[in-house]
Image (cartoon, rainbow, N blue to C red; front, side, top):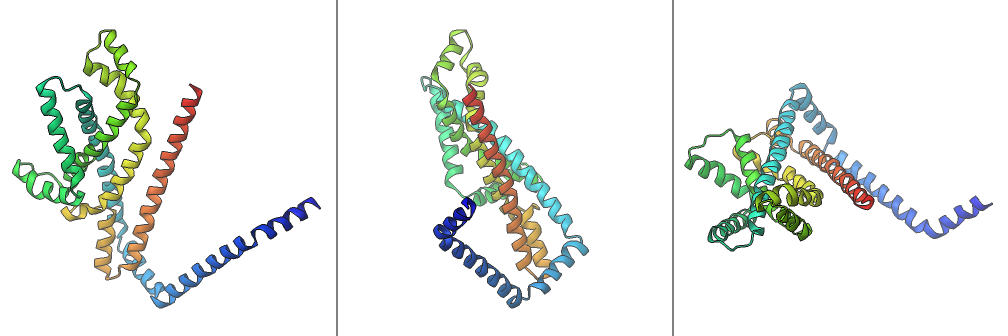
Amino acid sequence: MEQASKKQGFWKNHWMDVLAILAVIALVILLAVSVYTRFNFAKKWGIFYNYFVTNRGYKDLLTGMKNTALISVLGLLIGIVIGTVIAIIKVIPPYKKVTRYAQKVCNVYVAFFRGTPIVVQLLVGYYILLPLIGLSLPPVTSCMLIFGLNSGAYISEIMRGGINSVDAGQLEAARAVGLSFPVSMLKIVVPQAIKNILPTLGNEFIALIKETAIVGYVGAMDITKAFQDQGSNSYEYMIPYLVMALLYIVIVAVIAGLVKLMERRLAKNERRK
């Protein structure tokens, strides 16, 4: 009796919600059938499958996924190193001229990389700056370096916020026991700051993965370039681009899930303390 009354109460309170959900499902199915018939989806899928599997187009995708991972991971690591150095320089009290000049240089660096699009930085860096200084690097290596420089500007502000979140007494205690300022920062303050900003670094990693979609401008093979080449060679863009979008969604969703899991574990550790 109680179960029957609960069911009746549920339908009485939520019948409009159930109808709305069913209506949305019906519309999605109707839209899918319409797209399938109007755009000759079966034929397009056959072309995609033939090029992707039979002509081994998946090899380009595997290469693109590997390069996307390398550019994102190494770009993030370079950015962490550069961002940490800039953040430390910015939090040093500007008592000396060298410190003030260094802070001005860091401000110009951050302003440039935060004030220009990443595609402009990639084109200027690959086609102008690297040749000017005599460096002839492969496209993927160049992208790692340029993405690392770009990420360093953003991570510097993230790291500066993390350093400011650490209790000032930590630095004072380290100086009181005889440690120098650089040693105190690198061994006492920075490790605690990194722990505080780990979730934000995860979001920066996600941003880097999405930004790698432009590396095809300098001839590097990534996920986007692999699907663009497939569309150009098969003269069919609809299925490759839909699969590309779905692949990016899956990759970002997995990384976002890992970031949330990391946030929960950090929160649990903080509560235990």
